[in-house]
Amino acid sequence: MTTVLLSISGEDRAGIVRDVSEALLELDANIEDSSMTALRGRFAMMLMVSLGESTKLGELKAAMAHLEQQTGLHVQSLEMSADEFARIAPQPDCVVTVSGSDKPGIVHAVTDALAELNASVIDLSTRSQENENGQMQYLMALEIAAGGTDKVRPRLQEVADKLGVDIEVHELSDDIL
Image 1 (cartoon, helix red, strand yellow):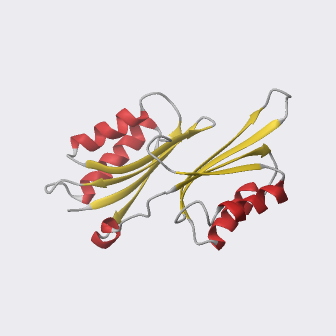
Image 2 (tube, rainbow, N blue to C red; image 1 turned 30 degrees about the horizontal axis):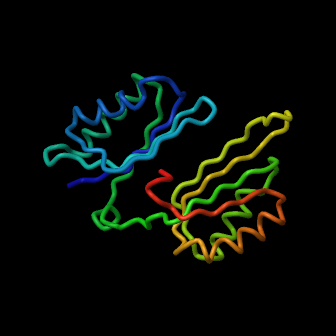
């Protein structure tokens, strides 16, 4: 079985996921894993796709080139080795939320502290928005694999105090998702 990592980006519009999934369905390709998001009018997705036994990598690349021409999307592909595809990704066990005045360095300070603790960032989302006082508010949410909240909570409190932001750490449960 051939497995491919696809990175697809372009101007956001309704129907992108339909267009991509339709092109893959026509090849009898299966979307094994995916992550998709829209950022300020741009759309980005990453997909792990397994090709059917009769589908060749060249056919996928030709279909993706056709998709690019039809939609204006940009597609990159990387064939995955069997070992890469078989890897078990760390499972998140904590959710970290950060909020406060927007300033440079928040992402670095939080992720630097997590790296010191050997915690893996599984998913990270950020955004800035205007609060009710007209000031820019920074929001960040991370799913991390840290081995529990006890080891990260004190270190992230130090970061919160230094940056003047609020940081909360919660155990990840099915209720949160």
